Length: 102
Image (cartoon, rainbow, N blue to C red; front, top):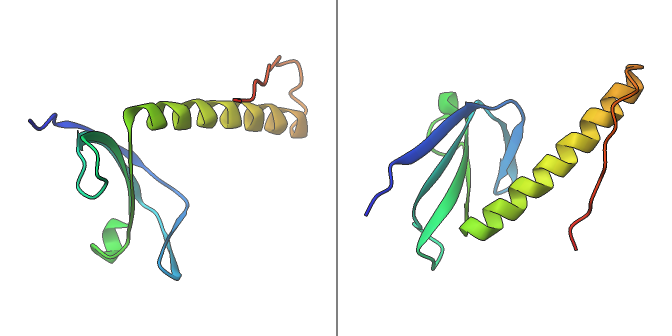
């Protein structure tokens, strides 16, 4: 059964496919049947440049548990980066507690 769970976000950055890097324009996050991984339903991350056609795509299929771990790691990295940016810009005072996953 298809879940029809799809989220689309603007993306600014670079992705690599094969030996070539390309600029990103959007990211699609979905929960549906795996297309390539030998798994059931997965979280799929698709990184695109819509102007460059279908070849400008990098994709990942993750189990739901792996996606949750990735989300937690991203949250920790973003929080630490926000703290670093605040220090650089002189906006100290934000208390951040970093906890590393085992």
